[in-house]
Each structure stands twice: as structure tokens, then as C-alpha cells.
Length: 399
Image 1 (cartoon, rainbow, N blue to C red):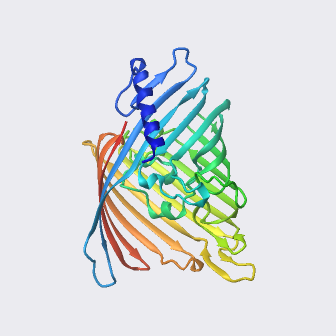
Image 2 (tube, helix red, strand yellow):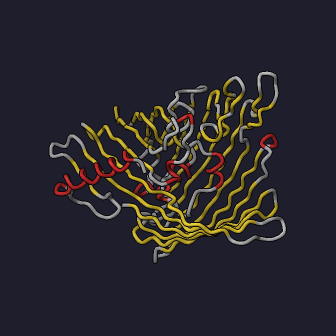
Image 3 (cartoon, rainbow, N blue to C red):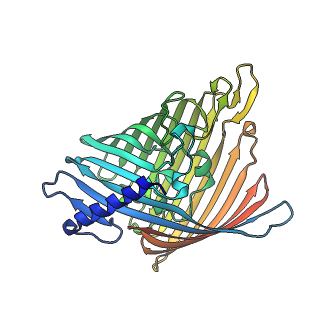
């Protein structure tokens, strides 16, 4: 770990100790400390979190499953800060990653440095229900991606998300909410971003990325922002539904998965093509039952990267579509049972076999999503044939 990292962690500890006498109304799950200045000109909430995982994998060689491959890992270790500055209408969020899975990806596009910054964004409520965001954060993509990794009801997200999501980027977002009645809500989200993904330091390589999302909530808001949290931990007393649609255009994209994946490089520079991604998704909750469904589609104007003379470079945009559906029920004992089916279907140009995965999981919520133990098992097929069996066990601790 670099000296700068130790210095940063030391600063956090000093800051925490300095304001420890000012902390009030703090409990587990609401941040390690919450500080508001005496003159109410700023606030800070600090909330670290840990995710431990134990994995066992059996790979099928076409005839039988081989010997199990087992590993332990710290999937996520993060430090999160949020609050307001000058006025409650000007909020901010900073989230830093410390685990290898969070900071991996050093390359020439980020000066060969770890990618510590996950989120660094300010959010200005400048007029009524309008908010302007600026900085690096998640784009308003599929619901599964926008839900925090700390609020998942299975060990990790689906292959729909891993292959088709549009993740984080740097730029601007405009958000607005319309209240047609006391309960019928529509939320609009627009984003204009660099299109290269998070922590890229060399500037814009191709065009820019344009994202729009529309969410309809016909029965009103979920409790505790439950439309952005998996499982019905609040046991909604009345039915709640969110239906969302996202359209994303990455103009002159230079990466194989829009703003993710490998860069498409030619002898004279970067291969550029327009990539569109569409998501249709929904969330339903009622009395401990939860249902989440998603559809994703990605297409490119010219998916095969070529040299100036028309020779293929070997780089290809990952085109195709995917479906994901998962349902769960929360028992009075706070044990939850979840089932998930995901199918990823790739276009012929991608030359990747279709994938199907079936997952069953059990979660025990000790203090909601902030302290939980989870396990799940996945049976996977590739091209219609047996692929692997994956068993996972983990715990989450979020202050």
C-alpha cells in the first residue's frame, strides 16, 4: 500500500477523533460518525464497509465436473463520505475503494495508477425538484447496477449486469421528479458524460456519452428508497412498483462494451463506432415479497473493428441482449430465500456462446443490509452445455 494511502487513512482517524465529541443521534447502519457544524454550514457522514467472500467453483470439461477450485477474497472494502456544504441544497458524495477488486485496472489511460475513486460527485438542488449533478458517479442505467453492492440480496449481480451495464463515468447529470398525484410519480434522469468510464485521465478519445432514464412509480415511493434496494426488508404494507426505461448512446465509442471493456486499437489510433444500450426494468414489493426484472440490449453501428485497409483488428463490440429475473420472500425471522434466472444471448458477430444461469440464495439479515450473512449456488450453461457450478458464502458489514 502506498505511503499516500496510509497518510489518507491517518487523516480520517484524526478527523474522526477531532469531532467525536460532536457526534449525536448515531446508531449502527447510519455511519460511523455524523457531524454537522454548529452554524449548519456543512455536514459529514463517514461510513466504511467490508464484504468478505468464500468461493468454490466446479468447471465442467464437457464430460464431468473437475476438482473444486476454492478461494477467499475481500470483494469490497470501501470508505464513503457524504453530506452537504454551505446549504442543504448542495450535497456531495465521495466513495473510495481499497480492495484489489475496487482499484484494479491500472493502464496507460489512467497513468498506470490504482483507481481509488469510485464516486466523487456534487448534487445541487437548484430549483424545486430539479437537481444538477457534476463529477464521477454511476450513470442512470439498469436498476441492478444502480442499486448499491451493499444492498444486494445475492452475493453479486447477474451476468446481464456484468456484460451489458454502463457503470460509472465523469460528467453531468440532470434529475427531476414530477408528482402527478400524491402517489403517482415520474422521475427523469439525463446524463452527459465523457464516455470512457471511471478514472480515465487522458481526456476524451472518441465522442461523448448521452444517457436518459425514465422511471414511473404508479403507487408512490417505496419506503427507505426501497426501489433502489433488493428484497422487501420493509415489508411494504401496500403494493409498490417501479418501472424504468434507459436509452444510452456512446458516440464514437472506443471500448468494446461502450464505456467498459478493452480499447479497440488500430495501427493509426483508436477504432470508433456508435454504441447504443437499452434497458427496461422493474421492481415490485409487497409484504415481504420482492420481484425484480430486467432486459438489456446493446448494438453498434459497425461492431467489427478494422484497419484503414479494411482488415479486422480482432476487436469486436459485445453485441446482444440479456434477461434477468429474480424473486424473493422474507420470512418473519429475517431469513430470505431468493431465486434468479439470467440469460445472455450474443449476436453472431460477437462469436461468444450464449449463457444461462440459475441461482438460489439464502440471506440472514441481522441489521438489514448493513449486517448480513449470505450464501448462494449457481448452475451455469454455455451454448446449451453444462459450464460450471459456483457456490459462494459471504458477509457484509456496513457502518
